[in-house]
Image (tube, rainbow, N blue to C red; front, side):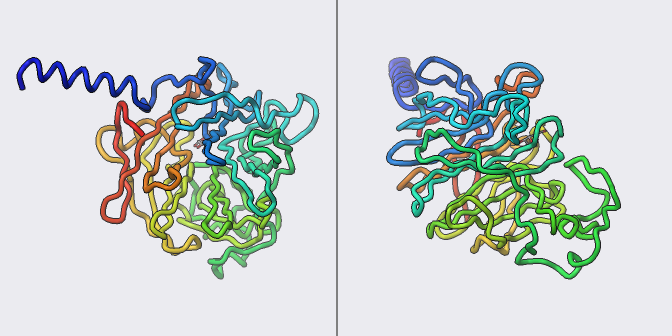
Amino acid sequence: MDLLQKLLTGILMFVCLVGCRTISPGTVWTDDNGNVINAHGGGILFHDGEYYWFGEHKTEGPSGNLAQVGVHCYSSRNLTDWQDRGIVLPVAPEGSGSPIEKGCIIERPKVIFNEKYGHFVMWFHLEPKGRGYSGALSGVAVADSVTGPYRFVEAVRPDKGYWPVNVQECHYGPDRTDGMAFDGGSLPAHPDSLNILGRDFSSGQMARDMTLFVDDDGTAWHIYSSEENSTLHISELSDDYLSHTGRYVRLFPGRFMEAPAMFKRDGKYYLMMSGCTGWAPNAARSAVAESILGPWQELGNPCVGADSNTTFRSQSTYILKLPGKDRYVYMGDRWNPENPVDGRYIWLPVEFEDGVFRIRWQDRWRL
Ligand code: GAL
């Protein structure tokens, strides 16, 4: 290439990157007011031609991972220019005794639209104030308009009094945890030999990191880390999406998976998850199934290249299918526990190769 050609190519690339809608993972992203976008552990709902991004509003300093403000929403027509739609689920005032009182933990909020009832339903991982992560509850809120305000309905442990579709003989036996304390990242023995499922049968199953998925027939599913984080559960939601039906499946017992994200392509269901290492990133996992209730087959780490063993220093939160297109976007969080408000967003294209999906790092990419 002579100098002139190189120059022209350079100018063309520059014009395209500046003028086209590009995504630069890990850089500071701002909204229409020039403020830094504050929607961590989020998910996206596409509704009436617009994308709505819901996420945790973090604050500065070590207490910034506690819910001091609530769930933040932004909207966009192109996934790159975001308008601030404000706090759509505010925390309740301090001292109110509400389960969503200021200082509680609200994580990974996801919103879905219920066609039948015409309402918007938000589920999130909820930990009551001052109890660390021991609550392992799911919160649910509802609104008539996509940007809220969302009305808090209740906090639950799912599937109280129901056995999963793949219950085993051992689960009907006694609780063998014997008052043990768990750290959320490992167990002294397999969850089935401890019978954590059976222990929680009558009080409801633990539910921490979570996502939601609406299938083509309108059935909605709540996917969450359960049984001291050792096992993933996929639970069916009721037709108004406000409760669980009691139909659920246990996946990957003892594999300690969290940060689940689900999507469907060509009739197959895919899951992406992380391991359980708190705010520190780890290698992602993936899985595929012909039916949402399984059997599920693990596929390994979908990330490829440098930093793939830490999911490019991020943790999955959502995989967005672009409406009407065979295109999917990985959404992850690069957490910053010292200053949570400065956590960054890692969005990357999802590619497909021989029945598996792959994610590669890109400094800048176009939608
Ligand atoms: C992560 C989880 C986050 C948050 C964090 C707390 O593993 O994905 O949502 O719960 O642990 O340490």
